[in-house]
Length: 306
Length: 215
Image (cartoon, rainbow over the protein chains, first blue to last red):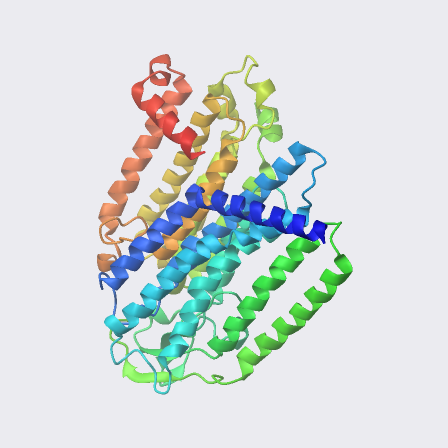
């Protein structure tokens, strides 16, 4: 019992230290300040298009999520270097990993503030009539905003932690950040067909622009150049509420796999937990694809700002 | 000189970065309307990759050798030339879909390479062994984030989109990139000239103080 108490207090102290380290990171401040400034401008209605805050998520996704990947990756390397320099230390790798994972509370807090600003903006400067498709609730939009805006600020740094544990080579975080952007932009929805499988990815739209040709959905690819296309706002197949739970499970899985890297951890137990989380994630992903919003719903009014 | 370049340049990383640039611009070529942010991402990769070319793992040995910084920088130029060649090739290949602004985009990439080179060379002149890694770690995600979000695009059009206008003015952007390129070129020239007055100047001392705090 005394061991667990000691371990708990060590974890608490280390977590506070890593939170401080995250707060002192220049890249975090760059992303956080820009996110908050843009949130204030959004609240004031400056630079908003007719979709209100419907696509604000790109800001925290890029500035807290992608940058967070690099920030926590760097902090993990720093923690490892400090541990190596100290030699045989009493703090095991798993405790340091958990402390580093706790630091995601920093970007998550900023993202949460931006999300609240986005929700307020949605009602203070509501979208025009050509935005919301019939039968789609505001909660649908807020779930998408939370997943893309807040969960990305948690998941990005956790991915950086995971990469530092399993691919500790130099430059991996940089390359990974670019690859993350490439895959995300291709799976944002509506680009190559309806892509219902994209709900397995960590960032995607559920409500965005839809290109129609003779009344049929075409996918946005090459549509921009075509004069025969009509732009509407519409949903992309997938249930954002279940997808949110899927993202939470994915983040938990990331932490477990990161802790699993420590050879002295209880790997048998962790393997069971990880397998359970993988099963839950797969089930939730399938449910997000098949339950509720499986069809595309399009606003019949032509989009005035697309 | 070529032998030094073959051994000293992190070719794998540079090649990987060049391949990423090809992939990014090829994706933009397929759908510039939807995938335009990847153009800015490619520019960010160029900054990091150019700076990577000048990382020196054996700095403690090399820095005291008779060969000066200018010689060592020149020896590593084939890697930079490779990046420039890749950029020019992919932009020219995609020029038909670049909203008739292929020259502006070409300029962005060239300035990015120049800025990465100038930064890394300057830091190397101060004895820092691996400035490229730091530059890439900061520049790539920051530029990528900026290209995705495009904040303040009317007043500060870093990566203008499509036909410009409310999405950022191409002319203003080109002027900004040209100014940045000129500054980078001057910084590179002065660093390579190894001028004592430059090293001791108030501007450099102040910049170094700021950088020390930042890093």
